[in-house]
Length: 486
Image (cartoon, rainbow, N blue to C red; front, side, top):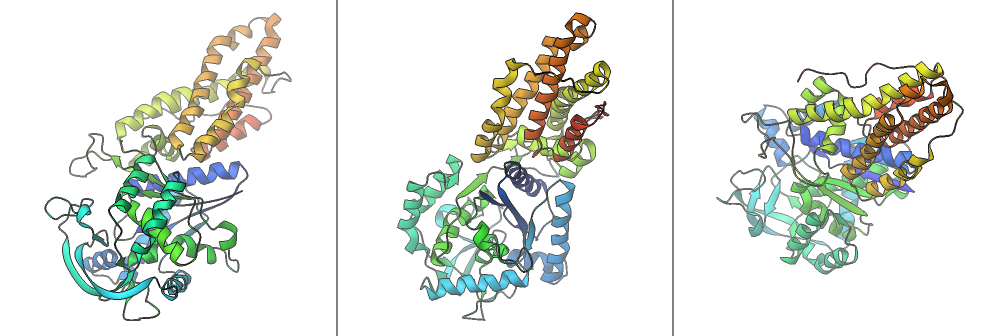
């Protein structure tokens, strides 16, 4: 089995923030899980560096677009190790290899008769780099995403015949209901299609910062066509001297935020069909993380969650755990530092951390660090034996929060087992030595099972625990989640 997962590529017109960390960690958790299952896994992320928003941001800083892109792309790259994310490749749309392959694919779209030249006039959001339909215009003639006033644009463009794919897209959504997940995202995409698809701009004539149109060098490709193709182009040069396209394409899963749903669920499959390419298996559209008061995060409101503050106060694995514990993945949800602290204390420190500490300490104390040669307690077998399959099913549904809850149910069950068996009492009665051996082996086995499934979420912590469980002799380790000042 192969598993190819992608994040959206991130615009370099601003610095990394929590939303970027959220999607990147989600993709990393998925990739780590599938590698555990033995799947041939490839994980792609990167930066989107062309288009008007980038050129405008660079101009505001007194820089050329390339210099601005280099500056911020480095920041996005630096974020990844800080949050424990390990992609197989980091693509930049300014890569010469990407640009060459974009031109090849879109030349094919042209040669297949899916483009034509015309005049476009409409309402445009420079932050989205997107012309808005009437249904997408917010109150006050503003962009509903960026809340800025739209501008009226009129220019000669090359157009992509999106309307020609109306029926094929309708069939896709009818025949493959899980192409877009979750249900609310699929419904939104279908509603957009039901309005009737209009042809869309493929190129821009007045911009220079982009990939040149090979059949009309006075134009550059509209940034979204350049950017979307990264998922395909990266496979051609991610590993020097090797083309991975046949091995990994089509992608199994694109992770995207809901603000870019239209591009990934409608424009993207149509463009791939126009180039005679296979479409991805699934697009998963996650929600927005909001401030603790339910409003959009804002420095002025002081309601945001700064991922770098979480890293400093609680550590990288606590951030990774929290993001999928407090908010159901796929839904909007409120996040905040107080909620991080509560989860850290109540679940990471008191439940998992305490389970690890007690298990290792009791084996070290009562059996001098040697794991007894005894069978484990069969009463826990149904719950422990079924965990891997249940977690795998949740991951296949991209239910990262549900999978984590399944794991945590077993963490809590093992803690209850400690209280039920009371190994400290068994240790005082020589006649119950066999019961103590069974209890210790059961806890060691159970901890090994839950830690294996938890590892994609908290890789550094779980690697430490697995090493401690496999050590000879088994010894106590320092607290995994020491108490912190809030």
